[in-house]
Structures are given as C-alpha cells and as structure tokens.
Length: 419
Image 1 (tube, rainbow, N blue to C red):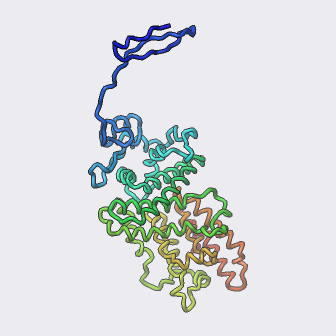
Image 2: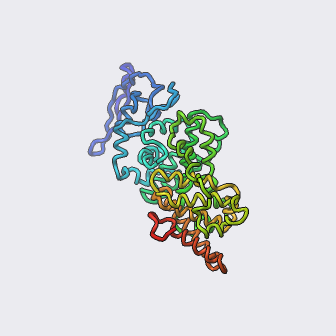
Image 3: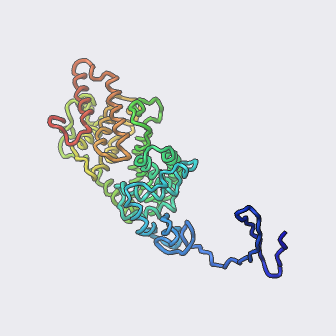
C-alpha cells in the first residue's frame, strides 16, 4: 500500500493508473496553483476572452458568432458581428455546414438557437427590405430586443426548413421561436418608441409577415383557409394588414432608421394605385358586373379599391422592387368590411383574395411561393364547387370570364389575348 504523501511539501494529490496487465499503480503529483487573472466584464457575450473586435480570437478560431453587449456606452448602431473571415466563410458555401444536418444536435425546442443564429447571415441575403451591409447592425439590435432576436431565429429556422429539407427539428424551432416572437412583440407594442425600438419593432413586423405566409405544412389545397371552418382561418391576413400601422408609427424615426428601403416603399405605396382618369377605365367589364361596381353606389363599393389595385398589379412586371407593392401596398386597399366578407366566404371577396394570391405566385420567393400557389388553387376549386360558372344567364358568363382571369393571373408575361 502506498504511503501517504508528505503534507509538509505542499498540496498534492494521488493519481491512480493501470498498466497493461491491469495492475494498479499510484503516484503523487504536486498541485499547481492556478495563476490569477483579471476577469473581463466587457468581453464578448460568448466567452469573455481577449475583447478583440469585431470578433475575439476564440470565437474567430471556432467560427462562432461573436457579439458584444450593446450596453458598453455605444449609443449608435455598430457592426459588431463576427469578423469578415467568419461571415465570408459562412456565406460563401452553397451547402449547409455538416452540423446543421445532425438531428442529435436538436434540443426539445428544435434546432439549437446557436445553429439558427449562425445560419442567419445566409438567410439574411434573402431579405430584400434591408441593405446587406446592415447585417451587423441588425444582429446588434436583436441582442437588446428579444422579440427581434426570436423573429430572426424563427426566420432562420424557416429558411433551413425550406432549403435543408422538411426536418422536424427545423419545424419545431420555427414554431417555438415564432410563438416567442409574437408574444414578446405584443408586449413591446405597449412600450414608448425610441429610435432603436422603432427599428426593432418594424423589422420584427416585416419578419412576422414573411413567417406568417411561410408557415404552411403542405401543398394540399383542401388545407387552405377557404376550406377551413375555424374562426382564425384568415389570421394571416390580419397579421399582414398590421404592417401599415407599424410603419406609420415608426415614421418620426425614419431619418436615422436602419430600414430606409421599407420606409421609402411605404411612402410610395399610395402612388402605385393613383389614377388621373376614371378609376374603372381598366377594370374588366365582368369584374364591374360581379363586384357591383356599375351600380349607382359602385364608386363607394368596398370592392372598388381592391379591383383597381388588382388591375395595376396585373400589368406590373414582377421584378425585385415590385414585390413590396404586390404584398403590402395592395393590402392597404383591403378595409375591415372587406376582411369581414372574406371571413364569411363571400364569393366576391374570396375571388379577390384568390386573384391576388395568384398574382403573388409570379414571384418565386421561398417564404411565399408554397402558400400562394396552394391557396390560389384552393380558391379556384372552392368557387367551382360553388357552381359559379353554371349560374343562369349573364351571371354565369361573367363568372366564367373571371374564373379564366383567376387561372391565368399567375402567368408572366401575359399570353396573347389574356387580359
């Protein structure tokens, strides 16, 4: 049996080891006192190490997201995202990093938040509403506003689900982070606005709109809102129409905003559907008849603005800059009375919704395309099941023309002879 170590020589400890034959051996090691070091209170959030900026050495070595708390006396937005090496390395690879494919990395809440945050630079390139050089500022802003961070993580999860395949961990993370984002967003709406909170709320609202359209489970038209019996079937439309009030509330902070493109598009929205002549000039005759725009009260009809808006979008090329007008600008034409009719499945309001969704399918945008293709097809099926083409006399003829318009709305450029 080994003798006890001599305590007079200083602290020590026994090490137990085994040789190849399995015999136990012990030896004494001298305890090495740990060197004292000053603890950092201003280092990066991840590891508090050398405080190098824009990314510390340890995070740079491990290709990790490195960010510093914004409560360091910095009153303005500054790009504190990882160094160019990490950002370029992450964004230049067309395939996803291997660890993103590992189901074992997923927690009970889906894909880990760290993975979602590290994927965000890739997903960020698909956001048209924010300049690409503002990535660091957006990350910095999100670190101080949980609802924005949650919406960023939900957006990353949705992007992964779309491009990495329908993995359960991505879907779980998307739903969980979206739930947190909406809950925290609703709480933040009651707080007074300042420059940072204004930008955070507006960007969160834009991301929630994207996520609301992207969060569909399949492409089965019978799962679309028009076939749903739930009272919240058109909940996505209510969320989408909430963007305009948020944009108006943020207008006093527009000059120093991180989101000049969103503000500019919002300011120009009313010009898109402006007309100098008769507002019904380009509205097809069948639309006027079915939507009641020829009646004496037609000029005050709740369908007048939507019909004019659809005609403008019908003739607008689906280029990158037009996507805002196809979505948010058109939503300004849909008043509360229209939404109530759509909720009750009024045939006219349902057709307007279907035609608009078909127009949106001209854009092959990842967070949009599955929803709009499914739902526009569902509207056509629902109206055919209602027998609108078989209505007697002129009503059936007018509905037949409108159904043909609905079926061709997705086509661009428009085929010869197509209205």
